[in-house]
Length: 320
Image (cartoon, rainbow, N blue to C red):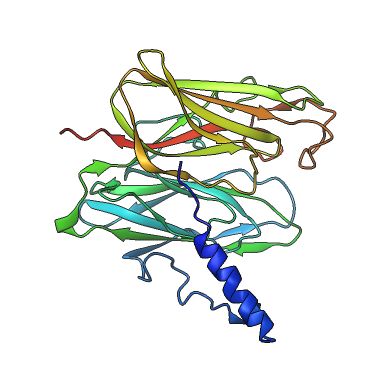
């Protein structure tokens, strides 16, 4: 997966040491970004206002299903997207999808279900303060007469507040439209009560899910998603000739840190290959995030329940 360079961090630490030796607090030398939008210093081509929502001071809040028509008048290709929450204290996460601008089915979006009628755009979770740029030559296609459908999860924190989240979109110019559509596929056993059952006190409860890709793909990244009991998640691929290769190992999963890990180079996954997602849950007293280690944990939408999803980011393999 994508390697992290220490060079910039080491240079920054060195420069801070010089400043500190001069008797200056290095924190005073940090310059805030000139814009809240974090893609190449440019304002988005379009800013979408998510409908305001009043979050009560207490209580469990059902997921909000919001559909916003995208009145672009023509097909567009998204090359970058960013979410700016109105109130970070209450916006637990959101997922966004491109759908047809027509009446949508009732009910909440199930994150574990891959519905061909929608295309995943991007998601937001705490700590994601940056714009997501899709790999060069790829993007999210937004057909004419589309809408943005969002599944939004709010949590109360003891004070009533109003959230006004915004979505920024940057488009490819007409003459530079990409050749490859960027996709995301979720691999999961399902998030319903019967799919995830974690015994009380279990320190390393195992879980796995698999999927066979029927077409050749280029794998660009992976994101692990579990809740408070998530301990680790790994992904590997079993090729048609039964040889195997590791994709990623998130050995110390953290619910508060759920990035999409991008690969240095995209990985070719030939048709007929099976990807396997394996993970561990810790429902014991030794996990400080567990609400109650004496009870069985089940799958569900809320954070005190559990999920197990591996998100694979990919494109079709381009023809030579």
